[in-house]
Amino acid sequence: MKLRNFAAIFFVLACTSLSASAQNDAWQNDLRTKFLNNDTRIMEINIRSFNAKDVNEDGFIQENMGEVRGTFLNAIERLDELKNLGINTIHVLPVTPTGKLKALGTAGSVYSAASFDSISEYLIDKNSPLSAQEQAQKFIKEAHKRDIRVIFDVPACASYDLYLQRPDLFVSGVSGEPVIPSDWTDVRLLSVGSEDKIDANVFNLYKDFVNFAINLGVDGIRADVAHSKTAAFWKELINYSRAIDPEFLWLAEVSDSWYEPISQSAVFTPYDKLLDAGFDGYYGSFFNIKDWKTSKELYNQLNFTFKDLKKYKGNKSVIGSFTTHDEVSPILLKGPALSDMIIWLNATLPVNSYFVDGFQTGDNYLYENANKLAPETNTDDDMYFMHRGKLDIFNLSRKPGGDNISLKNDFLLGNNVKQSILPVLNEGAYTPLKTNHQDVFAYMYSNNIKKVVTIGNLDYENSQKTVVKIPKFNSKTQNLLPIKISSMPDAKGGKIYLNLAPGEIVVLIIHELLL
Image (cartoon, rainbow, N blue to C red; front, side, top):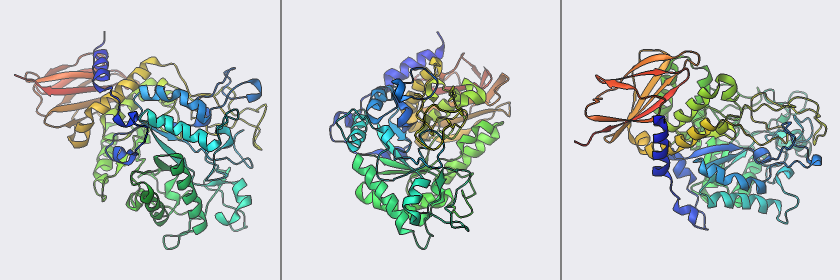
């Protein structure tokens, strides 16, 4: 039996508990507090595919063949699965109606909003006597019963359909046509005004969304492309929500490595100004892990992120955005090793752990009929438009899946380990450690009780015989507990010796021996 299996059993038994809040009928939102304490383990889900039934396994749902799209009601079936995996928060991709004109995909992108205060027809079970709002509320209440918090996503732009109804909400180009931001041909740029004068019409649109979300029982909002609106816009909206619910979370999709607006006609508000405006956290730049070749690149990102967060008034935090629905599946990029690396970086850093549905079992997000002609469509696009290797947001598609049991076991273990060592990560000292290879990183978080050591090989093709120097480590007076490891390392002379497989990551805990 591998040593890592003993650690898995220990941590699952030690960390399994039922929150008192889950036993109460009256839910008390605590999301903002937990997020600022790096205590959320977030799963990003798309309701319309979350529990879909793709009978012929072609990747997409044909309802006229008896296949079933994901809905709020059938999504409830998977909540226990998420709970058992250690997830305590879900980030729900946009649930508002989507545009049908100049659309991408047979259902339209979930980010092509046709309304900001109602629920997409795709997410509703038409056979239920419950209204659309009641079905969404039931899903949220069932999540809360399991001690799972709910974040809703608010789109940054809107559909061409909404433009035709409300042209006053949009920026006009030189020719008078609405502006297409970036290369997102299915959406149009909303007018937000300036720092000195907020566009009242668009602000009220977002205010309606806040009311819509809070009335459903949602615990927070993730702001899509948050940098496309002014700090003044967000500050007023965030203050409005906090007057209703002080625990209401605001997460900004923005990175410290993003510098360009999505259009020449769009504003660009950098991440630091958004945090000053009231956002509780942001994405950071951890998604760049796919490009990191040396330990220095990882150290630089960690040093910048955690030093930077300390300069803001009040607490701020960041998500472990190593993979999101905008990123290609780690399985396609570098195989299961990168996914495992992402699990354990989330588990051993003071971030809010973040994953995409399907990641936990190794989904490559490849769909058999992707980008082919569809037999039926609900938009003016007759193709199954897709971004290769990314979670589908354009069609009614299959449930995210995969069959990597080893990865799923590590996912569960990593989430339980994170819960156990969180006090050390939040309050302990961070120390980058010296190794004998530039492509091997090692860092330690430590307090007076324990040291958490993480070592990883960023070379996904070659093994590395590795030596790591651990400050004040004495193998005679300190116990080395393997948490995530394939074989026990040698420890002597204040150093750890081990052979890392390609892309392997190792987690150890060092305790003082009781003499």
